[in-house]
Length: 145
Image 1 (cartoon, rainbow, N blue to C red):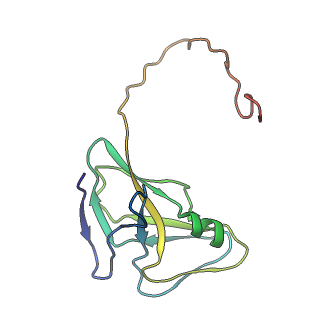
Image 2 (image 1 turned 45 degrees about the vertical axis):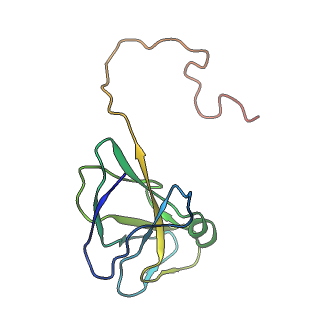
């Protein structure tokens, strides 16, 4: 699959895979100087990229496991969605879950993009839903083990 991409600045870096079979493509901070993110603060970090995700797909912007586990930095919305009809700059709302300030440096890997297919659906309003064994059992209702 080909995805058309435009660099919005000379310093922007194209997404890169960390390994041959990685699902995610690393997204890089397109910033000219370090950005401080204080504890429990969120900062919008641009990637300097705009792209054309094919119709029938979206770009999921996920946390990088090392950045999240070791530094406490993750996308504020947990998973960002880049729709196929969006043509603006891809940005990451990076949140600091830690208790100390974190520094994001120019060209640092800040998230990963996974291109995911999806189905378009139509919703039908009905007066009743079909019965299931689970019924209305919600959070934790199926047990822990």
